[in-house]
Image 1 (cartoon, rainbow, N blue to C red):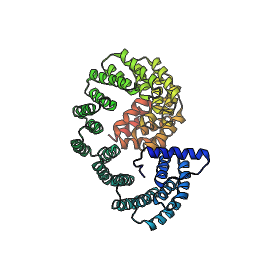
Image 2: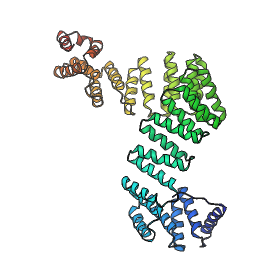
Image 3: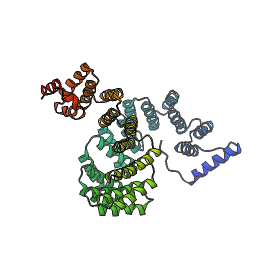
Image 4: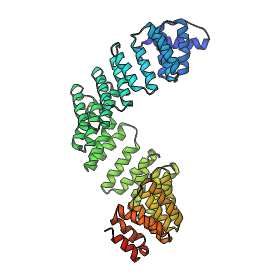
Length: 463
């Protein structure tokens, strides 16, 4: 239920009610005062206090339907659906055309996963409600639950017709177009909305984002400009405009805008990071590094900041410094797969193969099961002479990338080296069937194996 309009008298009722609780006295409140008090507690997540107020309200006003419906709402919130349905049935016998009973029944169906039944209840409620916008919003959410994005979009757009400043409905409408992969439809919808609401900074911002998706950065910048005209403190619009300028390689202008956002609001690590990126592209390495350091100082959890510093030193071949910073990053967040991958690659360059293998292993364990991670780890294990571990690694990689030629050629080479001829030839034939040109892997990584006459003949037979 939506909290309606209340005035200072209602705030006085809340203060009076809380004073009563402290004094252990029982005072009389009319039903509308109780409604406000209970709504206040529900809206602020104080369900225990709401339940207590409901009990007292029903002791003073046992027949008031709105109070009984608040009890239903709390029962649904606590997943006591059977009790809620029983109470709803009693209320419906008294007032069969109460839209709120239909809304609460729909809420029960929704919690039970019966979204089509919930939709029917809400459609029925539309005939009786005085607040159709609320019903359309609920219908939109139910359609989202069943991935019916077209009908969801239609419902949210009806909300906007009734209340153009319902930004939740605006965002939900745009999300539906995204789910439908209909960028042109989203642009058309936003332009129609802006015809009626030309100073909506949110709509201009969203329009700009649609053009960014289409990589039409000039139109995106124009839209973000209108968002800024509508609200010159809208940091998000400045950021997106600056990002678009960056895409157009207008780095000086992008830096100027990113810097402006720092004066409008508290400095953001993201803006500092982008300033650093722009300076790096301009070849101003000292300024780039300064801003990267400022970014991770502002937000030590900004992984892109640590990666930017690490990559900066990697590009300049200052590998010890790169390793120093990626170690700092890992100390802060040891579950970041990108950190471990960088750690692995830098250690590999430095010839620290055991540390490199650990890095690739941790990166995989933390969720980066990319093919290259499996291949790199296997190659490092082989350098370390860990034949059995190499085989296990590659076979685990095959579970993610079945019949992958790059893995199969490596397995074939290792099996040949280990004199496991049947396994080797099975893998080699499978690899050649997948991609005969990748036999170069065998030639480069296992030259002694590849030089054998019968293996060359097998490879040649697939060319």
